[in-house]
Length: 262
Image (cartoon, rainbow, N blue to C red):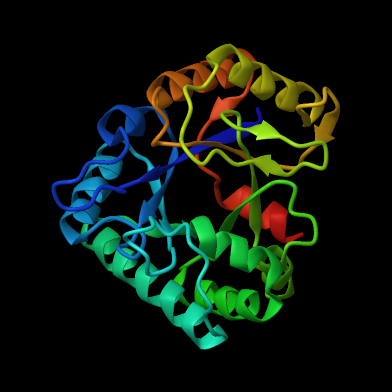
């Protein structure tokens, strides 16, 4: 039976400011990407979110971003390779310590926002980040939007033998070339449309683009944006659709990692 993962961002609140629907969403997903304090979150939020995930058996990975709390990590900064290495190592190490204190391990790393955009194109920064991920993760693993294509970080990861798990985004639209159509403000997701994308991917290995064309994708995880206005409803429907399609819902396991390495 094929296993498909559902991941979502977690712990993006900061102090008294609340972001996302963690309490509702966590029981519905299998993997979470934890904000680590640069673009969102704080130590208390990270500890609480880690314990919530542990309670529901959800694997946690680091979601490092640029040091930009005011802009939620979505503003591109000019950084060096040394910066990129240190930023990812620092944030992931902080989360790793919190996870270990709660009997968990660091599952993966998934770059956030503008850091993702930079690592998509800049080979020098991507090489530095791949090195940091290899050094901090007990079993290095990267999550990245499919298609992986010629993106810099997946290429740098491949050189080090780090598996990259492709993601499908049922709550976003796709351009004909496979690029995601990013929402600058989160919209209410059409649940039926999201489920149609999930079924199409499971049955044919592709998603439907805005122009009606089919875009082939290689992926093992569905990503649901936790800050969407109806994200718990979307996650529940996506999970049900996966199960009704004859697949198992679960985090990416060791067997999938080894398959990605081969």
